[in-house]
Image 1 (tube, rainbow, N blue to C red):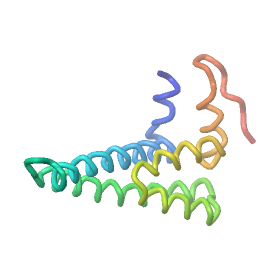
Image 2 (spheres, one colour; image 1 turned 90 degrees about the vertical axis):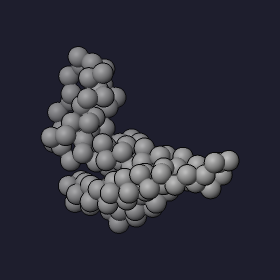
Image 3 (cartoon, rainbow, N blue to C red; image 1 turned 180 degrees about the vertical axis):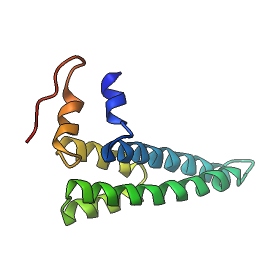
Image 4 (tube, rainbow, N blue to C red; image 1 turned 90 degrees about the horizontal axis):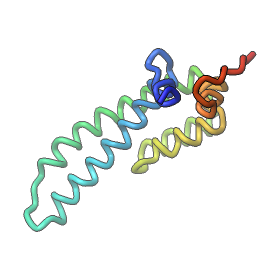
Length: 127
């Protein structure tokens, strides 16, 4: 549980980016479920699309802003910026991008190292 709370530490840019990326994916799922009920259900309703469409739009803008902030903070290359942009468009792409960014150290060395440490194990110092 300690690793999970550390990953979403809102005192860091990486923590905010992780939270917004997760919210973006959840809003995508809500929007897809809403579109199912609007277009494919036997008793169509638009309420899901109205609610999750607005929520997803707001979280999408927040994801783009958080990606810009993370990119500046962690000095991403143009390729990483482009992957983040594509990830914001593909359903659940933000989570896939986040996992990749953590594993490749794009979210900072300390963040990727802390994610693999066991609770109680000291965090190695970085230079």
